Length: 273
Image 1 (tube, rainbow, N blue to C red):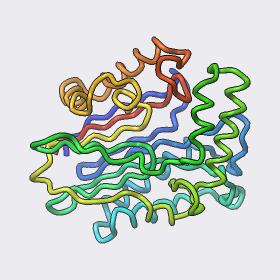
Image 2 (image 1 turned 90 degrees about the vertical axis):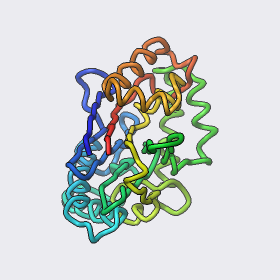
Image 3 (image 1 turned 60 degrees about the vertical axis):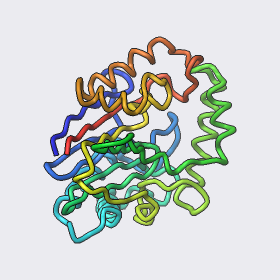
Image 4 (image 1 turned 180 degrees about the horizontal axis):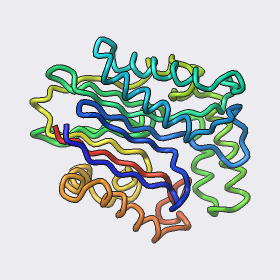
């Protein structure tokens, strides 16, 4: 694979909770599950720490364990990362650090892929329209609260209160069997990822995007997925993110395009096969 990647934090100079890395035969893209300020997590390390270590362990498993399925590789990486926390972190806490995951690797004559959460993998075939995989762990029980958040003023006390209520509701339900699954402390989540194989002879390229970068199509409608892939191929992931940022700055009040945050960490990978 020939890979280009770009990543930007939600604000310049701030730490990012995204992580992207590649090897010649594999790629990983993680989006940390951010929490409202002041929400306890039971962990002394934080989400950015967790995301980076899970991403490194996952990339290592993808490249050195072809005998393990891609979901098993994620489960192994979750276990290995959990062991790094040490006894001072409460991994049973509902707000323990967690992440959305996109991963892919060359596996014989196929590309093996995995997506867990609201990040996206876009397959660009040699012929025909793109295939978008992901956003597969929605939380219908929280949709009313989510819409209420979008209807409030960014930065207001009302929005902060609703965001906290939504975050607590999601965290109480996730990885429980009654809510969304996410890569956190339990390897059970890996079994709920969307996985599959695509023959390499049918595939031109793949793209992986966190939801902050996927706003190009999913939230702002700056172009179709075919347009996004063309932009990635011709001008690279950094340009796609730049166009997202330009659009965000025209709507800092989140009125034209309702969303939880005016700006989000944004990361994108584009890999030619």
